[in-house]
Structure formats: structure tokens, C-alpha cells
Image (cartoon, rainbow, N blue to C red; front, top):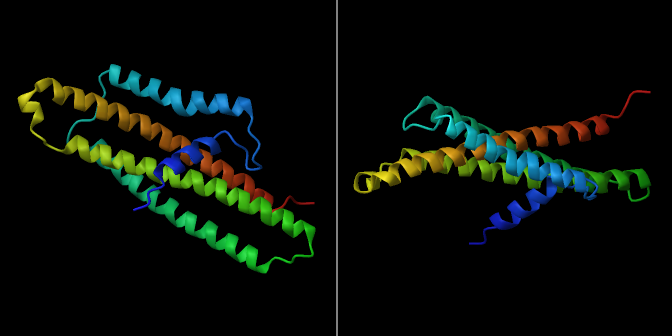
Length: 190
């Protein structure tokens, strides 16, 4: 079984501070670290500190799980659409027209960039779903060692909130990328 999870995570983190053209901007890298890595952790810590954590069988768990499942399915469908469109563009392009070559290479770069982010977003949603299932499991360890029950509750709640914030950030980032490319694709009015 050839799992490429590590490769997807590494490429997606790089894609968050890399332009579609491949240019890495130091300011974008700093913003990625602050907004994507640190800020969700601080917000999650603050929410947990204020006494808000996930409780077994709460409606919030169902809402988060449903949202992640729906978006994961939609994002998976989007990957198929992007790959299909890229294949069609490659098949219909004329080798003589330089503009078409520029558009094709730009669209293929955009497709790789976006597919990486989408694949990572799907992995984040799967992580959230797994954590929510873990939160609802009754392992019986808490009866033997009570501190483990509380620790599990806090750790799982922290991770779910952390990854949920990252999930929202990724969705907004993907929408922003798609918006830019789609506006470019339809062109600007004269």
C-alpha cells in the first residue's frame, strides 16, 4: 500500500505560501505560519481554556462531522472536474499558438496547486472525522485511570477545533484561488 499522505501534507503546506506561478514570497510564508499554524492553535487553546470542549453525543459533533463529510465529497468531485478539464485542454491545444501554450502551462500549474490543497483539505476533514469518532468511543480506560478521560476530552477537543479552523482556512483559500483563475479564464470586458 503506497500512501502519499506525508507528500500531500508537505506539498500542501508549501502551496499555502507559494504563488500559482511557483514564486515563494517570504511575507506569504510568514502569514501562512501565523494564520494557518499558530492562530488556530491559539484560538483552540482559548476556546478550551474558556471551558468549551466537545461532549460525547453533542449536536456539535454531528454538525462538524456532517460538514466535513459533505465538503470532502464535494472537494473530491472538484478534483475530478479539474483533472478532466486539464485533459481536455491538453488534447485540444494547438502547438502553433503561443498564447494557448502559455494558458495551458498556467492552467496545469494552477491545477497541480489546487489539487494539492484540495487533497490536503480532504485529509484534514478525515482527521477531524476520526477525532470525532475517537471522542465518542467508550474505551473504559477512564474508569481505570480517571485523569485519562479528562485528558482525552481536552486533547481531542483541542485537535478538532484546531483542524476545523484550518479546514475553514483551506476552504477559503481554495475558493480564492478558484475565483482568481476563473475570472482570468472568462477574461476582462473591453
